[in-house]
Structure formats: structure tokens, C-alpha cells
Image 1 (cartoon, rainbow, N blue to C red):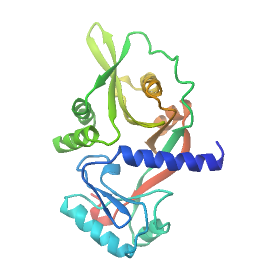
Image 2: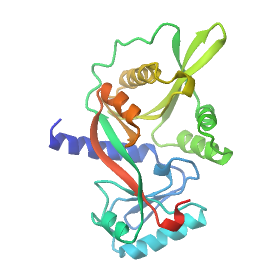
Image 3: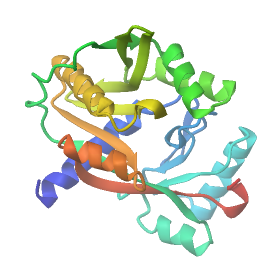
Image 4: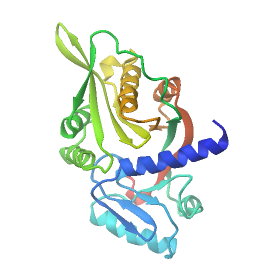
Length: 262
């Protein structure tokens, strides 16, 4: 993948990701997209500065801060290579706003080779609805009931439909939940979301099996390329996804005023 292809795929993946993470609590101030979901996902409760607009940056930040604080949320700005104005990251850094939670966006330019990889014996891919998926993820992550309901609301009402799955195995002790994840397909693109393996089953290849099965589901529905986001510090996950053929497209991070970091 050369630089031009990487840039174009990154641009497309960013747009697909924005569409898939759109919450009901979304509006625009000038050229900035503000999202006010009370869930855990920061992509659904942050500013995405998509265009410069006509207002000075300080005025935009003040107006956004009022909206976030009225919603009981900390002010969060997501910084990507596509952020406008381009100097916004430097301006926030100069104000003393720390950078945190850096993540990589990875893309898989083709999905032609994902078919023909069956699940290991005894394992099945089980579809689940948005609320059941959110409740299970909330149990794994210790989310509050408000956060669980916010995730279920956002994903059940998403303009890009989510499909949640559990990878399960039938044993003499009953069904075991080995891993879970979701896909969100829009046209040729599919995003992998919420890939999670419970602690007792990590390091056994279940996340790989799940991801291949999810990509197969998406490919059968017409997807031709895939994207995902992963924390820059999550070395095991990065190794997994690179082993599955995903490649780096771009990185992003967040900034907040110090008083909003709890």
C-alpha cells in the first residue's frame, strides 16, 4: 500500500467510522461535529473538528464547552490528520491540554481471501441484539447502567446498522462465551467494533477466529474492505490485527482541558 493509497483509504475509513459511531445526541457548531452520548466510547462523546468555520477557535471551544458541561460530560476534542483547522492540535497543546488515549486506525484493503476459514470444532457464531450485547460488554468492563443503555441506544439507532455476535463453544459444562464483537457495514466498508475476549480465554486464538468469522459475514453481505480502531498501547491487539492483514492508515488522539480530566 503506497502513500497515496494509504491516505485515500484512511480518508474513507475515517468517514465510515464517523458514520458508524453517530449517536442520537449529535449536532454541529459551525464546522465542528459535537457528540454528547453518555456512554463510554469517547468517539461518541467528543468534538470532531471537520471544518474551520467562521468563528475564532476560542469562541468555538467556549460554545462547545457549554454544550458538553450542560450534558454533564467532560469536554473532549478528537484530533486526526483531517482535523480543521490543521493547527488545532498545536493550539490545544499550547493551552496545556494533555494528549491521551492515542489510537491507530487500521485498514484491510481487500477481503477476497477471508472466506474458507472455518471455525474450530464445537464453536459457533451466535447473533445477539444491541441490548444483550451492550449488557454483556458492560458486565465485562464494569460499565454503569447509564453507559450500557447509552451504548445500546446508540448502536440500535445507528444510521449504519450494527450486528453483534458471540463466539461460543458447547462443552459438558454448557455454553462458554469465548469472544464477542460487532460489525458495522456501509457499502464496501465494514468496521470491526468491540472485539473482546474474556480473561480466562485469552491467548488461545479465539479473537482471531472471531475476527475471521466477522469478516466472512461482512464479505458475504458485500463488504470489500475493512477498518478498525485499536489503542496504540494495546500491543497484543495490534499484533493480532496485523497478523490478520490489517495495515496502519493513520492515528488519532484526544485532548481535554486539565480540569475535565478526572
